[in-house]
Length: 215
Length: 130
Image (tube, rainbow over all chains, first blue to last red; front, side):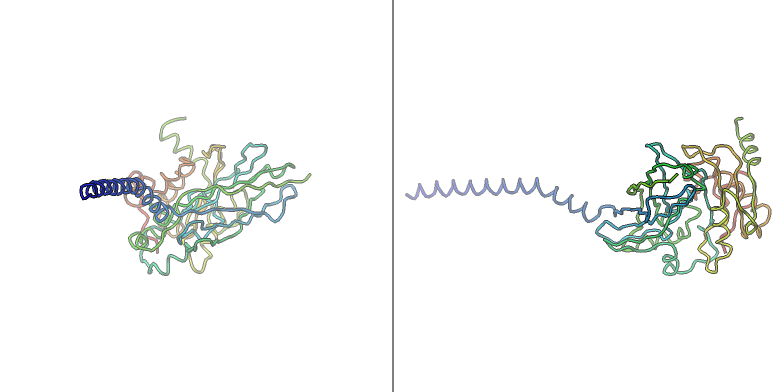
């Protein structure tokens, strides 16, 4: 009896051990995945979406098209976005480039512009607390900031011609740490890196909308 | 046309320099407005000391037609050597379009500081902004 009990105990013991080993193996296999997913969730690059709207669908020939632009914080953390939304200068720290499409043919503006402030080096540097809000705004998760962008008929000759046009934009930002001669906050890079959240960097396509230029 | 000298000459020949503020009405209004806004701003946010507008090809490169450079009070108050630095920098925009990173990067040769354009062209470096 005792012998039987000892054998059973050994067997159960082995089974338990086996179960523990199996459990550990499963956990071990699962754990890195869980950890990496968690890291991705916590440290993922902040995401935004940019949406464009128009109050009207129909426009007269050569009429400017006014669009409402909204930049949404789609991430789980606060982030900074550039305050100037209607920036179309191609060397801006953040900009929105709008393209018209006529039957899938892209129509780009007839004029490209760049602007230089030469502001990365200054004779005096005010505290970051006064400088940062001049250029960047913090967005909480699920919040947006918005503004108006005008597609000027003078820059898009096609807006003289009747027809249906699709409008889509590409919003991009190089952030407040950009190594740029026109970045007024470049001097503050060390302090900016210590902020609890960062500026959004990247590029993202907007939704598209269709307008009609009347005859 | 090839090589650096003809390219520079072409860029010079196609450039029109507009002082801001002045009366301007034309296709490059956006650039004018940005420099004008900076000149008039009571609290400057360092927008436009100089702006350049040009006509692009479909791929964003300069199409070679005449282009406009708008300069404001910072240019007007600068000595000749610094004005040259600003203009060379502005010429680089259409020349290298649409690759802006080469033109505005602080470590590249087109920056207006001592290690950039002044080093290559013998012009004066832009001092820190007041």
